[in-house]
Image 1 (cartoon, rainbow, N blue to C red):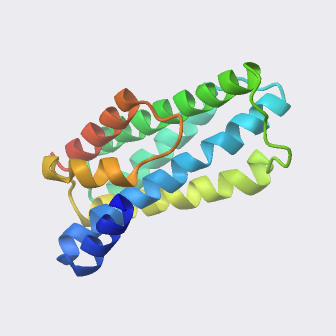
Image 2: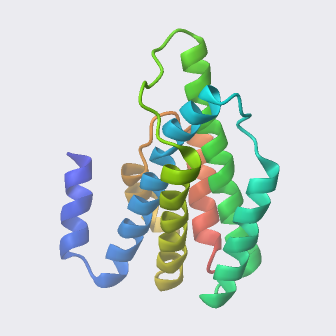
Amino acid sequence: MAALAVSLLAATATPGWAAPVKLFSAINERLSYMQSVAAWKADNDKPVEDLPRERVVLEAARAKAVENGLSADNVTLFFQAQIDAAKDIQTCWIDRWNGGEARPLNVPDLIKDVRPELLRLGNDILTLLAETPVEASDKEAFTEAVTVECLSDDARNALFEGLVDVHE
């Protein structure tokens, strides 16, 4: 019901309000891939944390931020919060599977299947970040839109704070 209300508001609201909803949806979609990422890493005996890959993601975000007229430092802080949230989600799923929950059987390949989608969504997120600032008053819409299982309240709050700070 809440998601329907957000969708209806987005459809009828001013364009400035619709963009944060699109942004929030893209963030939610990107984080929703973390269960598949965790399953691939578990199947391939890879650790959740991949610092060299994180550096690549953060450097690309910095470059794209500058292209979009955003503060590279603020965008980096937001993307770091997104990476931290992703690691928390992956760890949560792996802990659940180690505790006896069934792991997905058909796991998409991280490199060939998932990573291209993560890159696309990362670019979409940066474009949407450049289009519309996120304000503190958008918190309820963010909370209703970003509902990925295993996302902690602390990680959700850090993501939102990072979004608000992008345009400061």
